[in-house]
Length: 426
Image 1 (cartoon, rainbow, N blue to C red):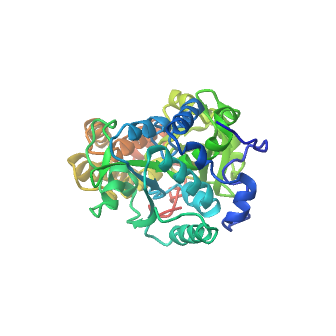
Image 2: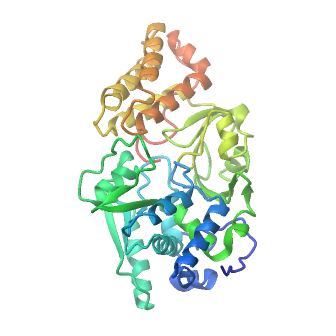
Image 3: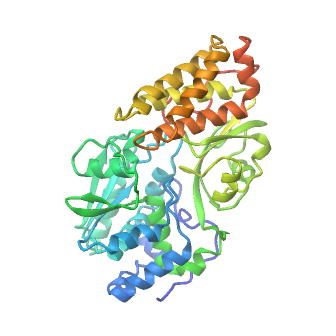
């Protein structure tokens, strides 16, 4: 497989983006060249590329972290060509990375989609975007028009706006939405069983994953592994918000210390904690912010990359109050399909609110802990597990605030929300 030499840089996905203007097709081609579709037009070519993807160690960037080659290989084994579903939904309220990537580097995403479709023999590529006013559909429409004018085939692409709810980006919900059904998650105890659309396998990939795939197809696995750590090579897009001067999206090398990443956004002052992974992630204390931003290292402190989110919590905020606000929002995002979500999440949110308002006692805390233990692992999707993980981490990290609230004293911090705006997107 022929590989192209790429300039040495730690910014791979968004370097070409001039401010907030999408990179044009001409600028994209000057930088990256055309996607190497001719090299994967044959079965041996596709096998070589799949081998490169496996050796690269690329994992899904949407939150699940599933090996990318495994999804493609599973789809290849099907007797019928599949449908490639591109996930740009980003229902995570604290994340903006997928929107940022599509807005700035749409052609890199489209290249990755074309390459993935070629690997699995798909003649249909569905670009799923939220139907809210984020402007992603017009950006993709413009990018596809540029390609059409340049004489490149675009007929297999279709743009599908879907409700921009938290659960709508879950892959089974996404496929249901594309099929014209309500975009709700389905219970899938065995994730190795492929999803289907019109009796064809549906392959769902996040836009950041596909952008990386487009680069691996051009430059190879050795190039991809030059950055990052051996167990998690490459770069990551991370959304930083909270108590910082410059909230936004940054591209960082996997393994960079969390503290160094936060410095890019200029914290407003001393931090007491950081929310890692998003609204279904975990709080970590200030003592852990020197931890490398990499899967294994985060796992060792009880966290995960999740949706690629870091929310800085300053010393003037109450972590228990922030967690209660997030829990209330997550309860409203329930798909209403199972008891743990429909009844359990509102109950957890209510217990937290009771504690924050100084009306709770030890019995309230015991009930909250019992509910978390009962809900964990019993939901139809991962939403309840994410809320439980968030709440349990908050009770550990903000134990002093918790004790103050339980004592009816209120915490010493200002309890006004800092993470976002009342459960809406930051």
